[in-house]
Image (tube, rainbow, N blue to C red; front, top):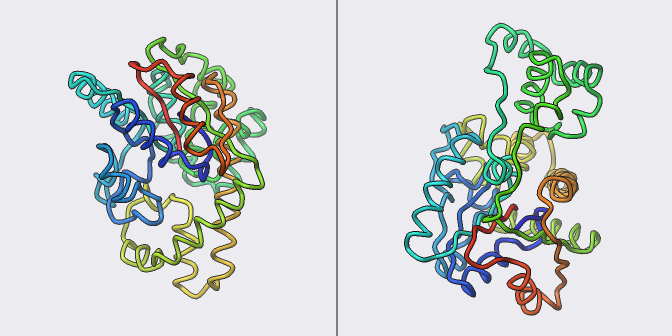
Length: 299
């Protein structure tokens, strides 16, 4: 299952797992970390007590993790869950992790240390300008708010001399054993849900959580809201501006996710509403999915 943040995927995945006898594998680069459960909207105790959850809150804040590590860990978990006669359901928010699982990893050139140092000396604005000059389409294909991915994209384009899309064409097709569905909502409703989620974060003392995680490594610091809340804690932004900045950043991310979902997987879509969630929407999802395979789900 895939779809934009705020659509209600965690609760829906849990209801689906209960229905079909499944276990959930987290596929979110930020929910992996301990100590940021509120900021990253990790599944709460109410959901985790219903069905087993894996790869949620398992890493120290200083740890590094990538798509290759996820592919290794998720593959091992899928095998274990299936051996026990259960259905693995991938649930998370990192499209690249899900793409690695469904299509495998493209054979990209190894990092060039000299080139990497040269790119690291540039500002992100300059990196984006160079990338756009070399490959205008690339800036629409990556998360331009993620400095690591922006720099890596320029590195790949410079090393290969080809558009980024050409390197990504090496990805294979989704295996027939993997099935999925894209969860969607009306855009106005989705924006309202995102705003409500941010309000709930502050009600749950997310500022204290971030304050206790100020020594976190670069991975968790890229979570939406971390830097905005740091600015609030440092007095560089008031709380109202901080909340609005997080809502805006989350909404932009949700729109990128919708584009990714539409273009990367080819799964059928399912429109959620307050009236059919989970209820009849769950019935329809069960009908769309091939029960017995692996269900991909992205937050």
